[in-house]
Amino acid sequence: MRQHIERWLGLLGSGLLESWEDEEAIEAALKIVGEEQLSAQREWLSHLPHAAVQEIDATAIEVCVWMAQADGEVTDGERAHIDELIAASRLDPKTEERVREAWNRRPNLQGLAERLPHPVLRELLLVLAWQTAFADGHLNRFEQGGELLLSTLLGVSEDRAYALRRA
Image (tube, rainbow, N blue to C red; front, side, top):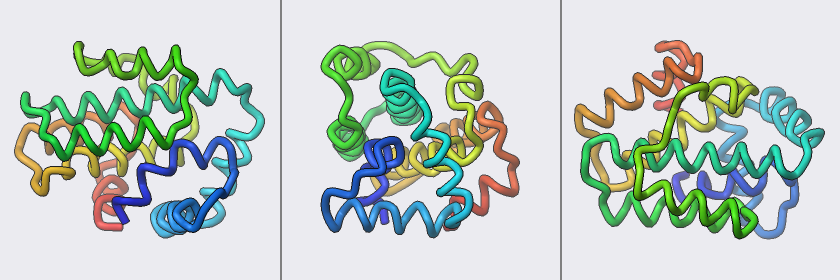
């Protein structure tokens, strides 16, 4: 499923299915949050201006950079995962440059729930961040702590976070 998660960012806002990989990405999201929740989230995103969707995508990628940095060591697998996220997100050049600069600083998570106001978007981001941390094949205690902090900042209960991790 991991190979399809990267495609969520570009798909959930646009709704454009351009390949079988896009369809599989939607199927992966459906498995995690369900059809009703995913439809509600996509409907909500469809009414946002393009710039707002770009900001949501950029925030999501910066959160994944934060998670990759959680243990103080960014692996090649984590970096490749985030490069795939950036490519799939279809960011404009200025926003992409800002996101790529996140590697040089610790992204700010303050106000995260306000920047990602839809609850399903928060849940999908938590899964995406977990997949980023696990891109190297293991989670250490710092990454586990990062996941707990993220779930708290995103307003996702501990029980729901556990269920999402197992989905």
